[in-house]
Length: 106
Image 1 (tube, rainbow, N blue to C red):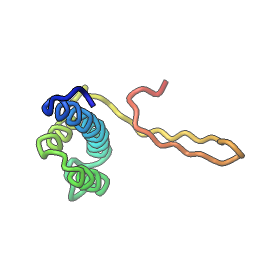
Image 2: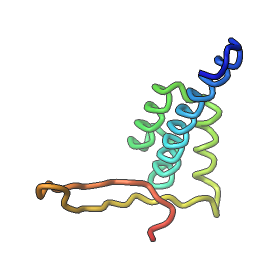
Image 3: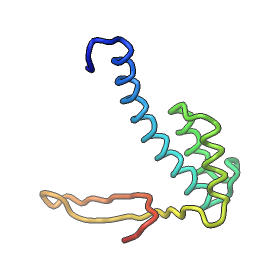
Image 4: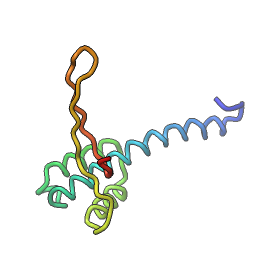
């Protein structure tokens, strides 16, 4: 930990927790954006979007962030994430399939 100050210790611990939450929230926002672009922006009509929103709420993502991700999906000229799938073989001849979201295929 950092020094002996109680508040410095809280600051460093909270900073680490916030960093983890931020990483999770950004992944969930990307998934919501892609799901809304691929189908309808209505969760009742789009099962993938519905599960993405449920996952976001399970991680206590604020509703404002969820709404912002939905708005971003409807904007023209926004980030265009697409789903890619890579297949290969790992150690010992084990087949590996990696699915990812990307805005750059290169």
